[in-house]
Image 1 (spheres, rainbow, N blue to C red):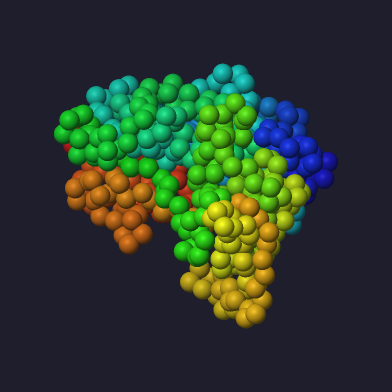
Image 2 (image 1 turned 90 degrees about the vertical axis):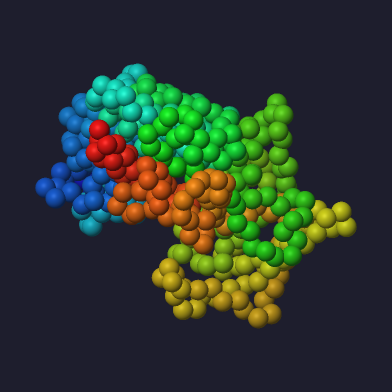
Length: 462
């Protein structure tokens, strides 16, 4: 075995997977996982842990895999993470833990994400559950939103003995894990639901179809429901648009709507009562993970798909693995290209998209080189559907119905960075509701940080 090369992960063939919604990667088997774990150097000062937003003890869980003790590996991971099967699949490990891996300096970084997934899948297969650490302490905490930040916060608080109730606006728990990330990347019944069941096994209660700000306000949670603290993890579900001509035409979707219909409402199924328009030629505007998810979903629904992105491939914000998979499956990348108008027919249906070629100028505030339009380079792409995947911002409903809750100009809730404490006593927040659209693992990190702060706050009130 070449210790400098990672053990490859088996996958569906591109031409096959492009026609179905089954998971792309099959994951490691026992032998593959042990072989990959053997490559770990078990560093005395592990930089991989520094790169993990929830500080999983990576060297020790990998050491347990190497020794064939998968139960101990699971126990080690779940000391820090409430959603290992999710994180092993969707975290951007290449820029976090694996990006810090010493083995990766002269060879391939250890496949930390794939090993985490292996351990989590093993635990689910064997029916293993995370353990509760303390008895109930009689204090109640409300968690708004059942996405990754809310689940992480609730899980940690439940382990510490709190009575936790999660309030979810939709009819199914899971947040972006359910409605945003496609089945072929994150299976719903076999992965997400089982992770949620693990949270329930800790004693966490879930109330769905409750829109905080409408059904109940944050003030109601304190004054009528008797909660001692509240965590807001409501995400960022308000889509952004470009403001160009034709954007309100029939056949233009936000990626949020497109993915929610497909993932949560199963619009890809002929038996669905909430169908979705399936275009023959689809343009997805954007270059992040959501853009890749929308494009690959449209492809599986039978469309020819273009991704339109105004910078070059080097600047694509999506995970390298997702870009690679999209290319393998036949997605067309129109890079250094920006839409200027959505063309319509006489019935106001999308008939095409007018674009302009771009070139990269000086770096902007993010450090990426700013795209500059090239005069006279306009051209049309023949499409009948356009999906806007330009990012999202928080819905202001909670902030507008909560007394004394400070927000910034983007409607994000303002918190103390180290604690997640908002401007209102006993109210904490984290994840996309604070940062704007970000990653699952960063949202989880914010939820865990807030749980620690809530515990410290309520313990001081005893």
